Length: 240
Image 1 (cartoon, helix red, strand yellow):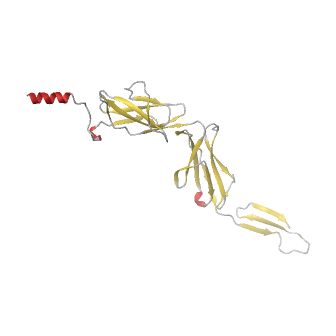
Image 2 (cartoon, one colour; image 1 turned 90 degrees about the vertical axis):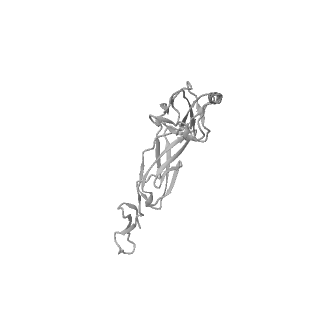
Image 3 (cartoon, helix red, strand yellow; image 1 turned 60 degrees about the vertical axis):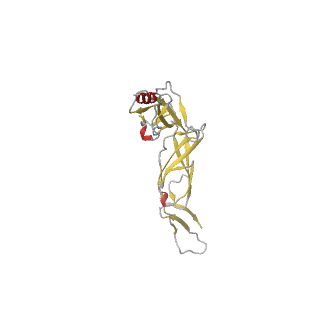
């Protein structure tokens, strides 16, 4: 009887804790109504546990190139937070003395979109582009002079290609639609929307044809030679 009483006292004085195995701890999840919001907007994130008794919640935010930091909330019981900044968000549940933590939740990525528009500028802006020519596509942000931007492209053969400019030695394989967007260098999770797509159609090299009004001439006479393309518009003409 004394032994049973002693075991009971030891159990009461042992801190509540979960096993080292992550499966012994309750899982916590984050839900969000939206993951992409306009600049100046906000979204509410919810941290959820199957068992809600006695749990408090801590929130964390991480941005590119920075360590994860805790997000200040009005109360420690805040299972809901309203955020207006882009980044990677996670939460944990905590309770007891000493504190027992759940594993971190899966991440939720919140992105902010600027009202500034990204546009694609083509140089030289020829109405037709032929294989072998060199062109440059530049991603520009309208009214974005006060912000430092880094840009990316959606293009053939690449889901996303980081660059502000693309210089192409055109071949027929480049025939496709190109669009870009730019992000703030100081906040990777804030960006413009994707630009309107520009469609490139690379044509095979045209063939030149030389035509003369007459091939029989008298000494001292003149003849007009015309050089034209197989697309039926003249490159140049001149009298000899």
